[in-house]
Image (cartoon, rainbow, N blue to C red; front, side, top):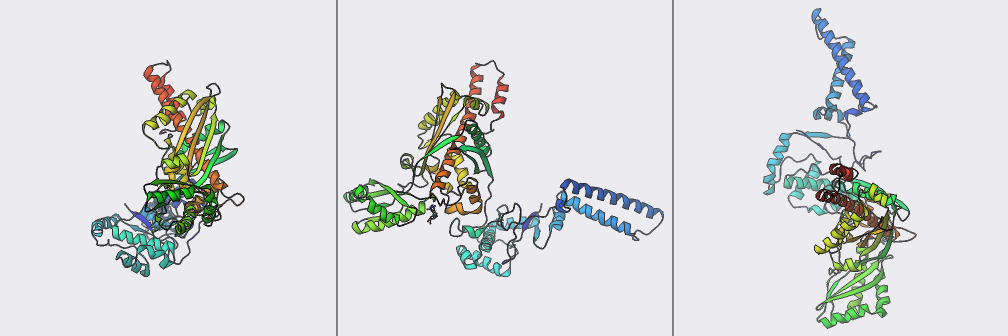
Length: 572
Ligand code: ADP
């Protein structure tokens, strides 16, 4: 088996831009089917016909020459054309059916230097791997310019730290390629499946990821239209969990056919809680009293708000553990998720307090009472980021037609599973079916911090029968959705495109913060759709099983099962 790799373009050469689907600098592989500017089946037909005609003609000529004792090497013009036609069509047909060697000939060009590493080459590398792990670098280096070869060798030898490559070379793509090659030689692992080209490494420098050696690709699906507060939205979801987008999409359909969902942002404030220590608990209590005295709020706000045009102090909540004091500052952060902003404001306040409380020992800018990226009751009760409630009334006929179940079964399942079951499990903010599935997929697609799915997925799902038990009222209450539309990963091109799809890209100039708040409501409403679909799928399965078990129905249950699952995502 052959492994095909691409040589990086010579340094200094500008990456080629492709007009169509490729990303920046992405190169298009020439395929056999590109031989003629025609649809592939017409190209196939032409070359097959050419092959057959040339072959038949040459065979006939060959037979005639043998009969007439004409030397075979004496060829007419027509025979030369037939030979050329035969060779060309043979190359085309072989390359079309995937003979890689021939393909490489077909697709070779000045711009795209492909080369082939045969299996022996690869095995040799694999054999070298254990030596590499023991400290002897793997052999068979990639073809690189001599200058880069020296840098790779220096990185492998530990003479140049890998993390300085970007600053030293001033070329992020080149730095990533050299780092990767050094890594390959150190570990003996090729990482063939991890793409290197086609990514703008400059865009992540100093912001999103250090020491890059490639990038991971994730598919983005879209669920919708999601009818929310009168808007028709299409929700991008980056996931590798099959069925998740389909299931959310079904929930969107049920919501849309029932008139849509509506949402309210109850609170909007990011938090940071430094930990400080005093010589005594009494002194810690004195600072607590100072911070919580409403008379001091304006002074604290002036100091805090110096950090940013957008960060505005909302309040401070304190907790004491012995002589340690935890001060949970909360502030609005415009369209930013706000961790940097709130941290800067907190630092200002700590510097200010130090003058009046010189015995205050700052242990950490973050003392975990914040509480960031950890499951904590404080976020569940007091909220963090955006606190959102989203609701919809799903009509009886939609529950039957789209969700393949009934209102009573849904309400019953929600109580037993999401409320009682989660209570039995000792859940903290986990009174839902799979909120984190939807939250994480949207977070990744839109450039949020995926680790904040921990608190952002806290959700209680409530289901009630209304209108004499005919219709379903469903709501999700999510107190700590941490999202932003500026800063961090939101500025990267793909993530920014997903934000744009939702109409919340970047900062909202007229009303700072409204883009981020809208994004939070999108997250909550997509969770609503996901909850609706999954609970319905489970209720339908449960109903069918219990019918079978208790034999209450004379219906053909295999038929009922087929009906119940026909429109339902298979896993969910
Ligand atoms: P975070 O605080 O979420 O970590 P960053 O500090 O990375 O975010 O990004 C916020 C930056 O964006 C700040 O420098 C801020 O001044 C700027 N900014 C521009 N417009 C806005 C806006 N509408 N809301 C919030 N920040 C904004």
